[in-house]
Amino acid sequence: MMTMTALPRSRPLVRADLEAMPDDGHRYELIDGVLIVTPAPALEHQRVVGRLHLLLSAATAPGIEVILAPFAVALADDTELQPDLIVARTADFTPRELPGPPLLAIEVLSPSTRRIDLTLKRDRLEAAGCPAYWCVDPVAMALTAWELEDERYVQVAHVAGTEVFEATRPFPVTVRPADLKR
Image (tube, rainbow, N blue to C red; front, side, top):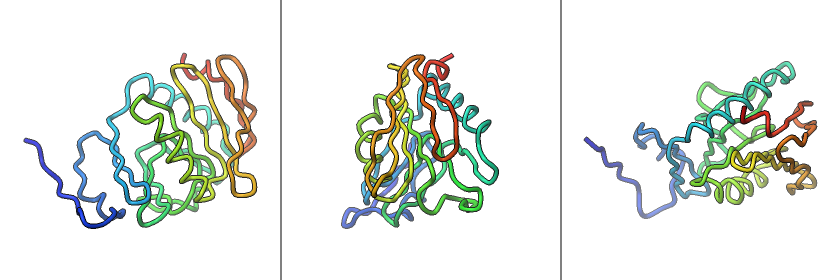
């Protein structure tokens, strides 16, 4: 039996409205009061996310954690994101969310999320002051990385296949997109 969720129609949504969302395998996020609903990710997407998690977790500095989605990143009362991976200081987490931008947010692009990840989420994380944002394309096996400079994202890397990205933020780690597919 399908449960219908009634959402307010006379105002933009806020984070408290997300509590009414069903536990149905979809990911519910808010960007500036607009509800973004995406389906559960595909197998290849999850493989890439899992390999990135292992790689980053092995390289983290003390006091920093790598967390898998779904986990709330609260940027404002009308904005809650759930990047595929977040890297943040352990002390900054609460049991339910990360209140504020992470040190690094990573999205693995899917056909249903590509445009949102490359525009809306990127812009919102930039405005919130997230120091680094990466997008991984599992089809092209490419990674694009941006870092905040003077409050604006600047692309610092675009690597594909066996090319190497020597990341320095939030800690040193070497990423080779081809290794994320094996």
